[in-house]
Amino acid sequence: MTTIFAPSDEQFLSRAVDLAENGLFSTSPNPHVGCLIRRNGRTIAEGWHKRTGLAHAEAMALQQLQKNGKNAAGAEVFINLEPCSHHGLTPPCVSALVAAKPARVIVAMPDPNPQVTGKSLHILRQAGVLVSMTSPKSAVFLRALELNIGFMSRHIRRRPWLRLKIAATLDGKTALADGQSRWISNEASRLDAHRLRARSCAILTGIGTVLQDNPALTVRHVATFRQPLRILADSKLKARADMKIFADNNVLIATAQSEKDAKKRFPDAAVLTLPNNEKKVDFELLMKALADKGINEVTAEAGRKINGALLAAGLVDEIVLYVAARVFGDTGLDMLVSPSPSSPADARHFELHDVSRLPADNLKIVYRAPAALSEILKYIKERFD
Ligand code: AOF
Ligand code: ZN
Image (tube, rainbow, N blue to C red; front, top):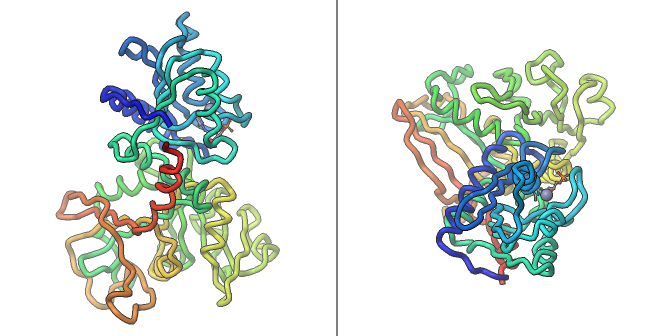
């Protein structure tokens, strides 16, 4: 792999990541992609992917040049993801790029889509285009990875990136015994949580939360034209069709009961029957099934049982914890229940990824499972050099 990478390349690639961010709430199941074309050190075109079926980022930037009577011959093209090489809903970007004859193409990372991966970089090199990829240690690489963490996870690990979102008090309680949870979140944490929802392909919750809180689980307070799929884990089909989660047909019920029984009660919802040995929902199978459906990122907004089950199954990649500086005491509801280890050395542990202060003495803490990124990074590093 050619790794010639000038400092100014990082800056322009970073702009391509900014452009890709425009599609953060809308490209699912496609990745977030931005493209910038530079000639003599100056930007001459920009593009980004908005949603499935619409132009890819590279196509949009090339079209912009064409509209202005310009072309990309001898120019440099910056993209945060390897261009596509297949006929999907749109034609292959690599063919458009080869035809445009740029001198260089600079990408942040390979496209892990098996229909694409590595092929385009090879095609470009064969066509005499210089190809550069960023170092996995660079700041721009890390930004690009964060942006498409779910897309990478789905293709490389065959499961979505799974985030637990929990809002709890200092003593780890999510509500009082009667379900009241006032003061645990405030305007700032709610807005942040809705941004997490908006970027997710799906929101996962459980029957306990739905019976207790009757949440809508839709994105509000954030401008978006796409609502994530709502997934309800309801092993015994205790939900009622008039609950808010069923306000539209963008719902999937994961259950241990038969599809026929589920469809009888919830005709508009999609159903997956995935029982484990205890006649509960098998979350490992659910994650596999979701990856097959093109789900990149899942945010679980659930109660103590599902949070604990996901943790015990080793499926939690990230915990986003909003901490309220209050104490709800021993009758409060726990944020998760899972089996205790036999010794502290065996305790499941997480690494601190990020921490920020929110108003009203609240904190947002992001923890990650130590192994969550390793397979993704291994895959990318194997494609360097
Ligand atoms: C790019 N640029 O802007 C996007 C890419 O069905 P299609 O034609 O939209 O293709 C979707 C696949 O194309 C997607 O899974 C990913 O591999 C790639 N997405 N590629 O070069 C883009 N959105
Ligand atoms: Zn493309």
